[in-house]
Length: 97
Figure 1 (cartoon, rainbow, N blue to C red):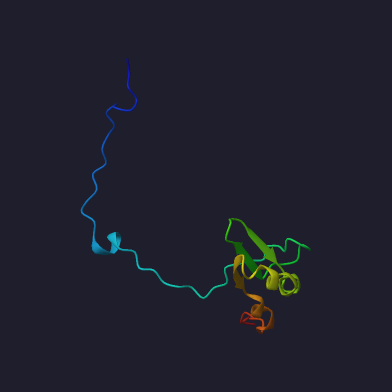
Figure 2: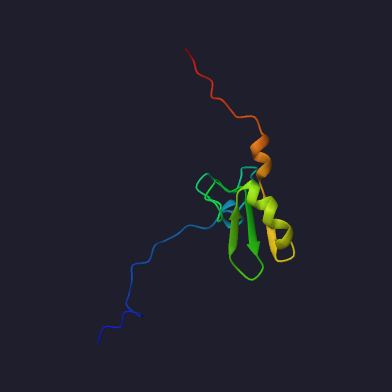
């Protein structure tokens, strides 16, 4: 009888790990965590506010519905508010003519 669990498999030889491979350098990115694909659960507009519920799950809101509902959710969720992105000036790519 063939035992799949104990079957001989080719071994891959891996060289010794270097320090950089053993320890990952973690950097904090300043990029927004929400993208244009994240939509408000109330109206479908682009979401700028995320409420991660303590009991599990998350709610996404546009800035308008975030201001409306977050005061009630503050004790029940961790809030990520990126609505300040709405007031940032747009970035324009340089075009060489």
